Image: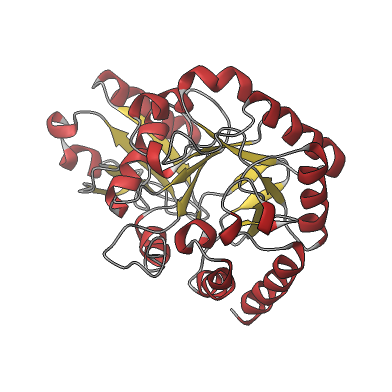
Length: 332
């Protein structure tokens, strides 16, 4: 349930209403818009008298929210959320390029890639330290050593870093990580989501391989319900019957998620397609669809990459994509 508060309402008047709702065991989330304030009522609202609340002088209207995701809903939070990552903003008109290698391999590699993507306009560095792989015999990442190398690249370039977490036991290792990524395979790891909700770090939440948009938003709700509102949704393709691409990139998810939710939405064309030659057209299409950012894999030597070299761009190719994306966004 939401209550829209009239413009001109004093803080004291609103506090009285919030305190009364608390006596009804209702948690209130306040969203301050440009011309109005929305109170999001969370809890068992079946015993709350909607007519009584709507009759109050300070209340413009009261509505029920039918969606199971409450805090993620655009109705609860009409203005777009802007996630600020050390000055790099995502959402609400702010666009970010997130780029870097699939996995961190060495100090020279990660710093070289970081410097090149930053020069081309990337604001955030990505790199895998812990790598979930389908085969147990594939490279699993450098783990804590990889995190240390990412932090060295951060110090060398000043770029915030994003990397994937695998389980709650690793949380202490991520204290200096700027954005914690939840991969597609962990999208419904609810204990991990709840633990991340108790942090104050931005969370990049990837859509699962076979999950609906509603399920993605419910996973985001887990994080928000535990107290962390700083979530970035990521569309990275879903599994269909098509075999020419690794996954099917669902670009319709971008405008749909932005209609349903206030959270920023970024697109990962690298994991979606699995092919470097498809990254550029899909990146441009994602920008045209209104994405708040792109997450692109870049490697200084893709042929010899330890992980996913086939979908990685060279620094030169990334520079070309970044320039074309800028032009698309200028047109929009």
